[in-house]
Length: 250
Image 1 (cartoon, one colour):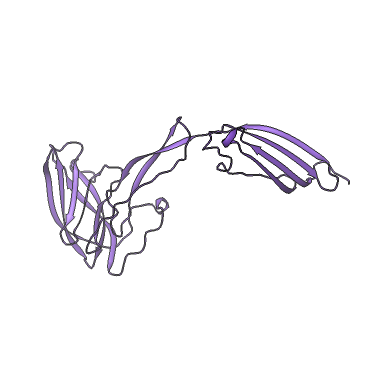
Image 2: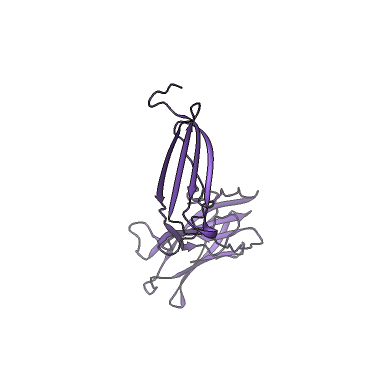
């Protein structure tokens, strides 16, 4: 059989991957693959017990048998396992999953040098019930409020409120600010409830929001609230309207 240097080799590849462990953790996987030139071989960490048995290196043996001649070429190598453990810390999450509105969860990944384990995150959602299938939700995932427009008092802030309303074009919404154990600010005002896009990034959604039910509108209104000078840096803001039996708090 003639061979030109640089020509892809056709034949059989027998590759063995050993996790270098012993007893119940020992895993040795052999695969036979028909090849034609360079070939990538993949194996899962689960089959090699890399996580469960704290595997830090793999030994790989490869034997290539050329088609037609039976000529064999062998090679061995040992590679180290680079591991990075990631744990998750919750930075913010909504108190309830409300009708027709998104549930906001913000978290960050932390590195750790403790024993390796799977990086997973679980969250139980508490659903909010509304007889009218309406809801209000203060949208402040950063847990801070933007200041009002330039020229206004520095004590005024913008309060974004997501809403879902059924057969209700307007609502009388009451806003209360609680600080230092007492109500520092209360205001009730009528607001239009127009349908519109929510101030969220669709790429951050785990799954698309379902369309509102017939007769239901979904949108956002921006309320201006005033914080008195005697309010502490951390306040609790509540908003509600009586007809939809729904509220939100921060």
